[in-house]
Image 1 (spheres, helix red, strand yellow):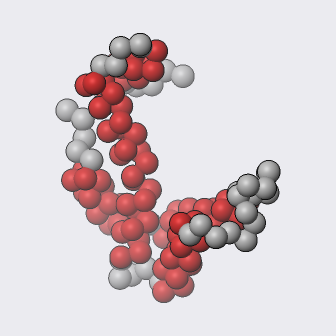
Image 2: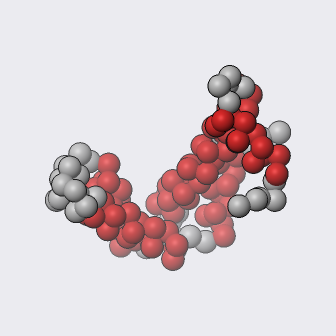
Length: 122
């Protein structure tokens, strides 16, 4: 699937298919991946810290995050197919809350923090 940024696709293909690692290209790929993975986490953090976020939403988000981060599960992860279903429920609840309660102001604060922590590629 071609993207609007054909040069980035070429760099990604070069990094993945090359036997010699171009450190600059790899660094750029990791920076983009870091920004992509960090964005939802930073948005959730900003939502938790926002004074206008309802208490129930904060509590549910903290409960879901705690469940995802703790090694103990209701259904152990080593059980095939069912092992990650409880984690999927917690993640779905977390994403649903973020989707309903993120405001443009929270997204802007998260974007500013993302740009500070993961500077955009030049």
